[in-house]
Amino acid sequence: MKKLVLPVFFLLVCLTQNNAQVDVQINPIGILFSSIDVSAEFPVSEDFGIEGALGYDFQNYDIEDLKYKNNAFGVRAIGKYYFNPEDGRDRWNIGGYLRFASGKSSAEDAGTGREEVKNTKFAVGFYTGYKWVSRKNVVFELGLGIGRNFVRTFEYEDGTEVDTSDIPLLNIDVLGRLSLGYRFGGSGGSGKK
Image (cartoon, rainbow, N blue to C red; front, side, top):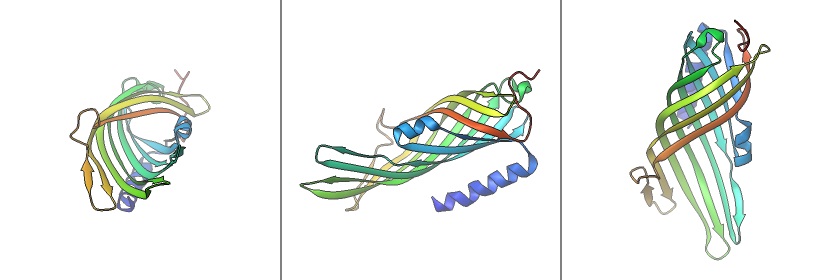
């Protein structure tokens, strides 16, 4: 994970040098599901943008005598093609995404003790969404992506590794978002003609 942060940061800095407009968003609905992500989108051209995101998953719950804890970090990149960009990139978009996540899960049972599992995921998929930008630069985006997990492994403390990336239905990756943010630089979108 640490090895990916520097290249992603370098890419984002290079893109901001060329473009003063940046959309920064957060997915507040994710908090309801013990997950949070922050993203920034940079325009590459009038009808194409690249979004980078950092996420954190922090699920903790109890089921009878079982205590489950999950902590994972992830990064995501989406390339977006805008079909009607004349209104300041606030329209329907389609593109592809890459997603990588890694973390540790643990389950503690009163009778058997605690067991930790390291999980890793790498997915590639297609994304479609719709973005609205207000005159005051408030950004709202609704999107859905579906793809395939090319890597989906679980490594147990005893060294046993389980790979579910070849099992149908377990290798499906779904990306959903209902995000809210702000556009820095540039002018607002909706209503501008």
